[in-house]
Image 1: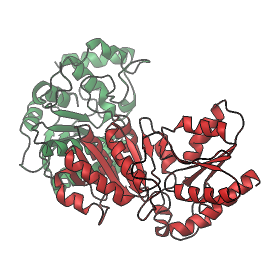
Image 2: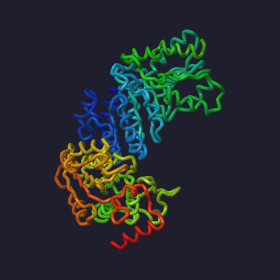
Image 3: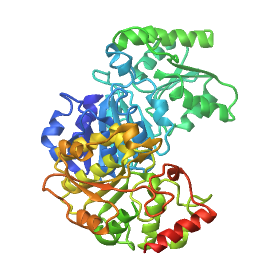
Image 4: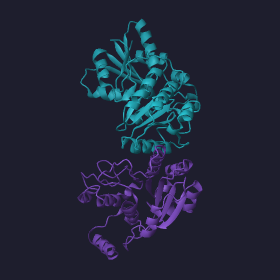
Length: 307
Length: 238
C-alpha cells in the first residue's frame, strides 16, 4: 500500500505543483524519489511531528495541498492538537498519512502500533477517515483525497498486501465496495482486513453460508446506506478491523445501527480488545494471537452466531 | 502588546481591510490567542469589521470569542488559544511564500509563557534551516506567566541568546516605546537568509498603576470603579 500511495502521489504531484509532502524524518527508501525529483514540493520537518503538522496547516492555508507522512501513530498522537486546531478547525487542505496502520510494525512494539487512530481521527469535525484494504484502494484513495478539499486521514498498511480488486473498481470516498455478494450475513472490513474477510467468506460458503463482504475503506463518512441495506437484507453484521473495538469501524456501525429503525440484526465487533498487546511478534503472528487471522475471525463468527 | 499591534496595523503590515483575503497581504498570527481583545480592537479600528462588534466580545452569541477566532471575523488569519501552535503555522506560511516567490511577510506574536512549549522550539529550529527571512517572531516578554513570574516558573534567560544560538537575527526593544517598536518592525529582515526575532520587553498592565506587574490581572476584568480608574489613568497619559 505504501508503494501504491507514494507512486500515485508522485504522479499527481508532477502535474500539480500545489501538492507538497511533509515528512517527519521518516520514509527511508519510500520518499526518496519524491524528495530528489520534486524538492520544491518536499519538506522534512525533522523528528518533530508538531512542527510537521503546524507547518502543513500554514502551507495549506497558503494554497498548498499538503500531505504529512510518518509511520504508525506518530503523525496522529503527538500532534493531535495541531490536527484538531490548526488543520480541522481551519478546514485546511491537509492529508495525514500513516504508514503501518494497525500492527503492521508489530515486532517494533506497542509504541509502534496504530490501534486507536481510527477512533481518534473519527471524532474530529471536518475530518474524513480512510483506511484502504488493498493496494488498488490505496492508489484510488490517494487520488480521492487529493480531489477532496479538506482534512483527510489516510491510514495505510505497509508493504506486500495482496491485490484484491480489479484496477477498474469503482472507488468513491464514503461508499463501500461490495467485494462479495451474500444474503446470510455481512462482513464489513477496513484497513487491510478485507483479505481475511474474503477468505472467511470462502470457508463459510463451503458450509452453505453466504456472506456478503463489504470493503469499508472510508470509516468517516460511513456508508450508512450500505450498512442499513446489510441490516435489512442479511441476518447478522460483523465488523472486522485491526484496531481497538472502541470507537473505530465497529463503533461507527454500532452507533448507526442503534439509532436506525431496522429490526434486530445480530451484531459483533471483531477487533482488538481494550488492551495493549502483551507479546512480541510480527503482524501475522499478532493477528493470530488476537483473533484477527482467518481462523480467529471464523471462530468469533461461529461463537456469535452459534453455527 | 497594544503598542506592538498599533504599530503593526498602523505602520507595518501591508493589509487591505476592504479585502481581508487579498493574496499578497502580510500575514499576522496571534499565537498568544488570549491577547485577542487587543487584536479585535485594532482590526475594528482599521475597518476590518464594525466597531460595535467589540461590544459583543465574550458575550453569548458573539463572533468574538475569548481566544482569537477566525470564523466569520475578517482579518483574523488563524484561530489560536492553545499555546505553542502559532509559530509552526506561521513558519509553514513563510515556507510556502518562499517557494511560491511571494514577497509578503509573516509576523507571529508569541507570549513568553508559550516559549515553555516544545512545539514553539521546533519551528525556531526549523526556520533558520530553511532561511526564512520573511518570518518575524515577536515575543511579548512581560515576564509573567499563568502561575508566577517567568523567572520563578521556567526562566527563559538568556532569552535573546537562545534565539541567536538557534540561528535567528534578534533585536531587543522596549515594547512600549513606539519609536523603538516601529524601527524594529519596519527594518526586517535584519539579516538576509535569517528569520527575525523581536524580543519586546513589556510590562503587564502597563499604564494602570494598580495593574502593572500584577499576575491577578491576567485573569481579572476591571469592573465599575476599577474600570473608571483604569481609564482615567490611561487617558491622562494620552
